[in-house]
Image 1 (cartoon, one colour):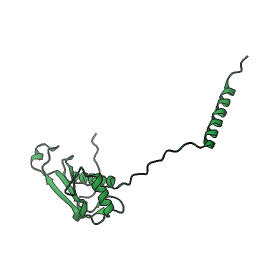
Image 2 (cartoon, one colour):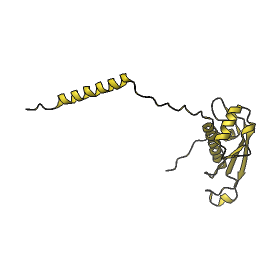
Image 3 (tube, rainbow, N blue to C red):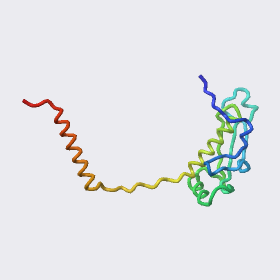
Image 4 (cartoon, rainbow, N blue to C red):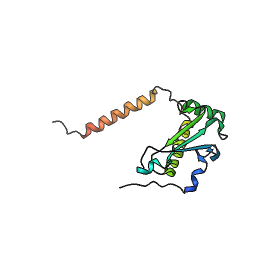
Length: 153
């Protein structure tokens, strides 16, 4: 059984790219390239440009603060070429589906690069009171289990 993914209306592909609720990449900053895909497509693979490349220049994004730009540059340094990050999609036979896949990958990539790492937990020692309560609870459980035993004759 084949499961079809739901994709928005055809004209919506050129809209802005939403990374988070407060961060949106304008459609003018998205640079699309199309080429022939080596993936599925049968005989049509040689004639249709279904492979999609989506590129975004990180330093040219007006919605990002300098700290966010630096965060993206450090975390995605291995994927950046002259400050431009590129995502490719050729999973589907349809160019439209590949465009949506590229948008989703770019959005997830930038969202993960902007995540703030949680603070590391500082190891602490147990307090005297917590140790005492733990031992009292252990004694209480042991006493309850001893009461469940058959009496010895």
